[in-house]
Image 1 (tube, rainbow, N blue to C red):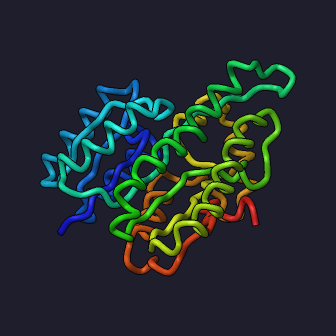
Image 2 (cartoon, rainbow, N blue to C red; image 1 turned 90 degrees about the horizontal axis):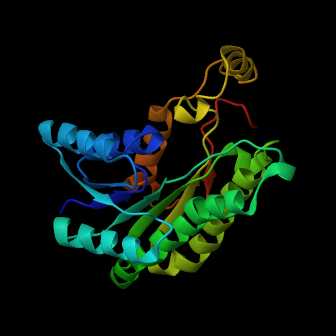
Length: 244
């Protein structure tokens, strides 16, 4: 029986690449989006044209009622709920002293509370069958911290803590929980960087290039495979050697 995967924030960037790779590997893919409906629809239609199994669902991951409906829809649509990729997130660059309470709450609600909501919701299906996988998308800044991104670094570090603690708690239920902490990846999040900024980042990366969304998708594909069944509570950081 095909397994299903819910990928939050899957209409663009890393989430989109993970959706494409998972679909090509034979999974039912539920593409979650909140604002980017056109991109989500386009991705769904692309995957279906290629002969894959995919659907979309609009949900604000910071709202538990919407998340519960999304997880239930996955079961109704595909007949199974198996894997969750907590990818939805926002970033923001600001001096710490300029971060407003609204900025802080937004960062926590989407990046951290969103993962809490989605994970707790899907576990009502995973725990009884004693099988499942959860991947949290963090960041190298959750490992090392980033100047002018304190709130972003804090929530990404929170995802790492969530991963490690939950892996211990869910181990007896045969549910693997792992974390991917990407390095500098070519996505829309780099749109504010100048060409000079990007060149400096490349020069500080031992592999002398920025990462691609496909680098991260390949890592996610491995973690949901049977080859990773004995891996849990780990933080894997595809970053080209930027952080060692």
